[in-house]
Image (cartoon, rainbow, N blue to C red):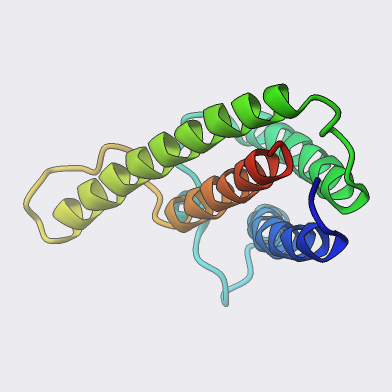
Length: 151
């Protein structure tokens, strides 16, 4: 079982990452509602793979799940079965690395586009890229907690 200090530190890291993601969601929502001059235009905020209402709904669900995950870490829940926690943590860690790798390829594609080497990036929109890394970091941190707590 993990110490309360480890759980608190992990919860703080997760809260910081989730806070960054919430800032991104609010930023895009402000652009949609008010189009302020001090924020980038809407097309920079998303790739267009999902229509904005569906994207916003999925982001809100991620925020709700993120809050639940932080609470479970802080309270030391979800670690009733050590083997299951370690296996779950291992799968999440692999997924987070794969996810970050795909975003690295997307960033590279955007770089090639900005240097006029390719006609268009794989997926347009520069702002989502760092925030996908934020989400990958959240998943990786939670996975690490699951693996450590499961030992």
